[in-house]
Length: 192
Ligand SMILES: [Fe+2]
Ligand SMILES: [Fe+2]
Image (cartoon, rainbow, N blue to C red; front, side, top):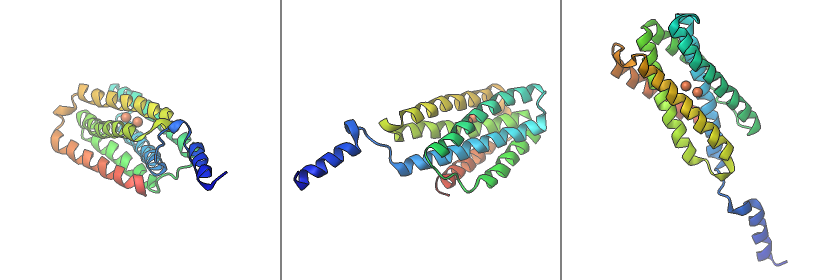
């Protein structure tokens, strides 16, 4: 076989059926940042439930969202292992920051806690939407998972609105600050 033919065969084997492959660096970043985000989300809701108590009416509503976050983090725990991705080194920071954000907003009242949910879930929902564009044919399963989680996050966002989040004192400035915080956390957790 000539040198030219050899390289053609090699190429064909590397990319079967002309599948478009997801960039491995992007895939790693997606799994790392989503794992970090879901971990942070579980801690935010832990903080809120710690303040309101599990058995209060609002506590039960938050528990429903917390249960879904638990499913999300478990899935990303599996994906870290399956795809051999290093988790962010900042988990201890998101542990404390997430809990503080949840407990802090809950101490300001139910509406403020729900405003926190609206802000966080808006950013995560949009982030999940963007990620689906980056995943190619070889990551259909992950794309489906992220689409499902996006739906859950948007449901959480709407639960926040239904619980009068917009009437929290300082709603506009608070949600802007939290959104900015989440976007910063996302940018950092992709890399570190
Ligand atoms: Fe989630
Ligand atoms: Fe969520």
